[in-house]
Image 1 (cartoon, helix red, strand yellow):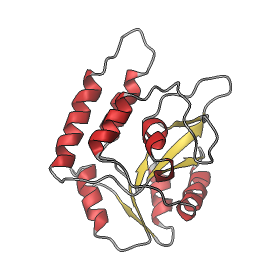
Image 2 (image 1 turned 45 degrees about the vertical axis):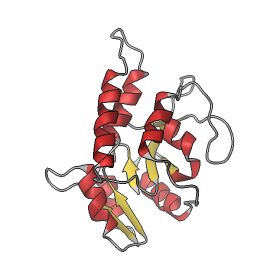
Image 3 (image 1 turned 90 degrees about the vertical axis):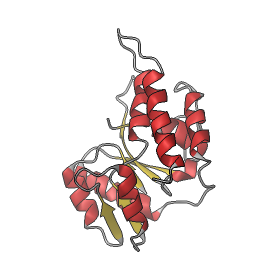
Image 4 (image 1 turned 45 degrees about the horizontal axis):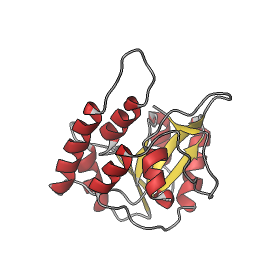
Length: 191
């Protein structure tokens, strides 16, 4: 399972102490794909990887939708997507069983920022994306523990080219069903 977002050292240390949880961080100079390969060899009820091989794809997808004076196109997204696809096709990584997304409440009266994990990925496989909605470390640790105990089975991910294509055609303003079947969400990814 990938822990997506920007977990702080305090959160990672606390999560690493949870019973039945093994935490895998990229080794010095290592990447997310190598961390996922190391995690695959660990026998533990829950293995959390604090790195995502799609992190750059996610960041560039989100950047496409940011409003600014400088227009941003899809070129950077397409470059990162092509790199991820080449790595995936070379067998360097597989998508994790689940994405555990660190999120926070959007401020009242504001639109949630576009989010790759809570948008296209969750739209494809709602049961494969769990959300941890807390802003302080103690609350996040409790929410991670709760999320781990409530993971639901669902269909496996489609092949990565289909995931990337879904991201290309996903519009952040579109409502997608949340995990409980209701439309829309006020949660945004911590970035």
